[in-house]
Amino acid sequence: MAKTYNEVNTQVINLIGKGTVITGDIKSEGDIRIDGELNGNISSNGRVVVGDTGKVTGEIVCKNCEVAGHVKGKMKIEQLITLKSTSTVQGEITTDKLSIEPGSVFTGNCMMGNQVIHEKLKTTEK
Image (cartoon, rainbow, N blue to C red; front, side):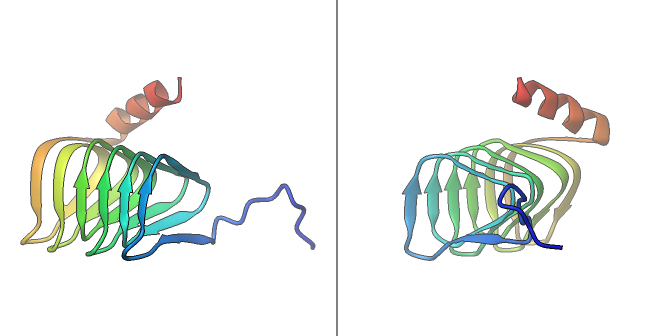
């Protein structure tokens, strides 16, 4: 069956490469990988990956997230956030599940649980 132009391919991975600096907000239906620098907010219906050279200053709202680089700001993750051993996160995390590898640095607050995240996402959508 052929795709129509209105269908969104959520298998697409958007990449912000090392050495790239973006100032502004990003909204995507698909996955996003950041190996560069973003000064702004990210909203994705997919997965957000901040690579070891990646740096995000702003809010991240997505389904799943993996951080190996630096994040400063609020994070609202619907399902699972993984903080790799090379990650540094400063801010507030709201998620259903949290995984932190030894060596990771996390400074801030974390609220966990399925009920908490759904209430937070509802207030964000308004």
